Figure (cartoon, rainbow, N blue to C red):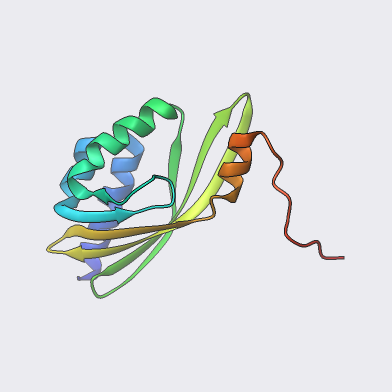
Length: 135
């Protein structure tokens, strides 16, 4: 991919998140593409991305996704992001990285890397404790 093609992809991906538009996501994906994310119980097909966005919007209507940084090499694009939402009057945020393999300008594979420990603790009403404390 050229630098301009990568920039266009990143811009379209960020715009799809800003709009939380399932159709915009579908336009970014090959229908036979796959998404691996620790946030759902199974591998997601590219053709299911519109539905996934609808489920997420329903579960977290105030969810905000922000692009932090990105890089690319060949047909691989890496995007660093941060998400936030308010739950019970408290702001909750977490970060992650998505690694994409692009074919013909569309996503054929996406793998999400994100620490789910804060989400799991939050869901259980627990405080996330560090594994170790430095003096």
